[in-house]
Amino acid sequence: MNRIYLLVLIIVFNFNASAQQDAMYTHYMFNTLGVNPAYAGSRDALTVTALHRSQWVGFNGAPTTQTLTLHSPIMNNNLGVGLSCVNDRVGPISMTSFYLDLAYKIHFGEGGGKLAIGLKGGGSAMSGSLAALKTETAGDNAFNNNIESQFLPNFGFGIYYSKTRWYIGLSTPRLLENNYSSNVVTGGTDLASEKRHYFLIGGVAIEMNENLTFKPTSLVKLTNGAPVQLDLTAQFLIKNKFWLAPMWRSNAAAGMLVGFQFTDQLSAGYSFDWSFVNKTYTYNEGSHEVLLRYDFYYNHQRKIKSPRYF
Image (cartoon, rainbow, N blue to C red):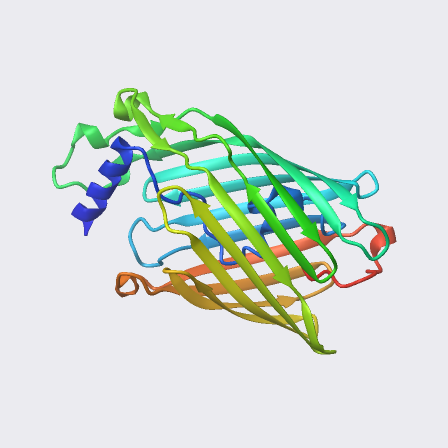
């Protein structure tokens, strides 16, 4: 297994990557700002969301991701601003990203929806240590170097239309297909290449009765060089406090989300998904996510006019 892992890393370091690279989230419906900047300020409060994902637990070098987002409306809710920070690690390689988000909202009158147009700007850098790899030959100088790539800027955009009980959005968070290089490792050749991703998201809240709300959501991810990925989640919200949601990811995984709304401001969630492709389930113990979200309401917002379903 170590030899296979080493061979895969060598291939990644010497050729442009052509598969999906953006971090994967089972809690995508709670982490919308991570894929669409137009979502900034949509919860009418300063919202902070923290997420940790451990993918394929038990598999050496498996991906782990930490995400922190915060966003808030400003200027009478006509604008939304946000900040997104992501640390994504695979094996000895880490990709760290920082982005600012800005959304302009168009209101369509009493009872109407809101159309938001968002921009995202920031950048990413790659780092890591090849010395963490186990090699057949001890002291191999080719694997004693650190990877330090330059911080490369990028930008993206998105649109997000929402009403009280449903939403739909389209976005591409990074338009530029940057090439990362490291003189130490590759002699100036490309280390990796970003690929442009497109996201289509949507969801609806259907009140079954006064104690139960059904909230199906979906995410479609499209990028060159990889199959189209579809996430479907069927969330059941019980008494606006507890949720339970089976999920399915095309050609990849199935699992379950659970969560609890402790107060009007604090909620937490956990998810487990199990890979069923190419017998990868025989080498790992599934993927786990933990989510925390807190809404900082202003004094005059203590009373919520309507439930925030998304």
